Length: 415
Ligand code: SF4
Image (cartoon, helix red, strand yellow):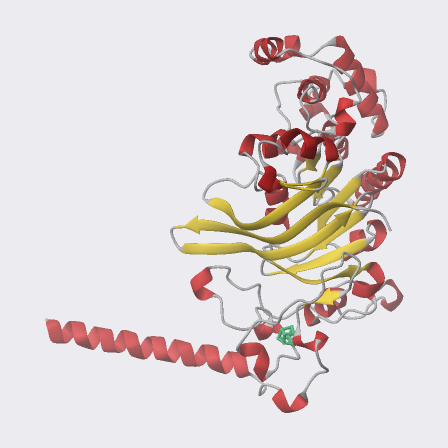
């Protein structure tokens, strides 16, 4: 088994909005091995992207990582900061949430890189694609003079602080060197852009959607990151281009040994690309394991529901079975006491209503599920009556109406 490169433990990210506290990511645990493709799958609003942004240190106000640790294995970095931040270092691991924010954010590009969902809004329309990738190459080369990433430092380029500051305030065309422009063209070639020398001088509006996504991947590779986070990298593309982009990612992963965290709502993409997968629901990882664990031996009814929503090519004309209902509100004051999936779960039991189930197991290769069915078989004697949640909702509405009637009566009385 490969060594762990990232250990995420008890990670919680909240948004403090006018409506109240939103628990977007709740006590997420996962361990990513070096060189694997780890998939995170779930519906929109399940917390996948916020988990990725938390790892990348890109959560913006009113969001905040409130708990947990993100430990990254990097011996050079651990050695460099051990004296100043001993509490943040555990052997070769550094807890990115215990180091100064500049250290965490400074790892972007050289250690962690991200491909975003929408390439059209991620590139600057006023600069050529080649300039933008060359800028990324240059920034990462200058950052590599600091002890952040062992891989980036192998490029061997050193800059003084003075030249770094002077160059960062110059216009971008002067910022990049001939060497970084050449590297940008190599990267465009690496991701399959035809005639990369000519294409490097074109602007984003001259690229198709698929080419823009390739350019984004090239830019993300500029600093030779250890971990590439790909957030729905094929969502905006048609199916043939999707396949090409996935091929590029798989090929890069095989050639470079890079670790990839792949975020998607598409189980087909997971099946094609990933070694292991975490299923997210309502901000939590509710099931985690190998592809076989999740696709064949799944335990959690939500995983089963996701799989039932996938078209079956051997059953053309067969009906899909959607998961009834909607993802729950993540506002803390609206979340119930029990399992967050209970009102959509076809096997919800009495015990599911009172206390959330635990998730057992810490080993990165263990199959775990956050469901009482992982502890014991379905207990029919505890089954909820049919229509239980509809009746309860109706009851709440009636109670609300009653209380509003009472309030109205009280107001009339006050008058
Ligand atoms: S804990 Fe209960 S309600 Fe939640 S998914 Fe499992 S069986 Fe369904």
